[in-house]
Image (cartoon, rainbow, N blue to C red):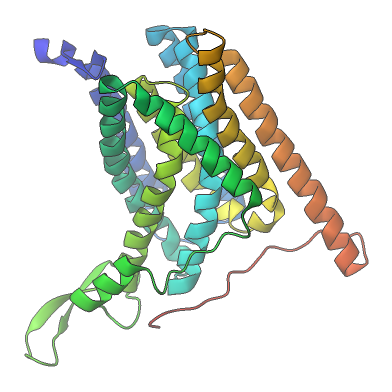
Length: 344
C-alpha cells in the first residue's frame, strides 16, 4: 500500500486516484442514471445540472483548503473561474459544430459526455507537459505570461470569432481516410454496412463521430489559452488539473442553456481579453515589485470583477440593441444556429 503514498507531481498518488475515481463515478451516474435514455435537454434541466456540477466544483475548494492551505484554495477558485470564463468561447464553437453537422439536440449530450472523457486525458497530458516545462525552466512561466498578454490584446481588437469547419484539415483527412455514412444513425458513432465495392460488411463512422472529433479538437485549441492562464495563477499541478476538470464539467452541463442565449454575451469577450492580460501581466508586476506572486485574494477578486462586469455590460447592451431594433421593449428570443449539414 506504500505506493498509494508515493509522490506524483507533488501530491500522493491516492489523491490523484481519488479525484479521478470521483469524476468517473459522476460521469457514470450522469450517463447511466440521469441520461440512460436519450432525450432533449431543456434549459431548466441544463441549469440544474450545471448548478450541481459548479456547486461540486466550488465545494472541492474546501478539500483543497484542507489539504494544501488557503492560498492553494484561492488559486483553485481563481483557476476554476478563469477556465469557466474562457470556455464561453468554446461553447460558441461547439454550437457551430453541432449546427454544421446538423446534430439534433437529443444527441448532443452524448457527444459532450464522451468529449469530457477525452478532455480528462488530453488536459492531463498537456498539464503534465506544462508542469514539467515550468519546473525545469523558470523562463517558461514568463513565456506563458507574455503569450497571455499578447493573446488578450489581440482578442480586444479582433473581429467576430470565425471557425471554418468545412475546410478544417483534420476533418478533410478523416473524410478521405475513413468510411463515413451519409446520414446520422441515431446516437451511434459506428455502424456496420455492406461495402458496395467488395460486398463485405465493414465498419463505418457516422457524422456523430466526426462531430465528437471536432469538439475534441476545439477543446485542444482552446486549451492553448487556458493551460498557460492557469499556470500563470499557480504551478501546483493538482490545483491546475482539478480546477480545469471541474470547470469543464460545469460548463458542458450549462451548454444547452448558454447555446440558446449565447448572443446575449456578445461583449463578454472583452472581459475575457482583460482577464488574460491581467493574469499574464501580474507575473511581470510581481517580479518588478519583488513579490513571490500577487496575493491569491487579489487575483480572484479582479477576475470575478472583470467577469461580472463583462456579463452585466453584455446583458445591458444586447437588451438595449434589441429594443432599438424592434422598436418595442421586448426581450430577444433564442438564437438559432443555421444548419449547414455537410453530408446530410
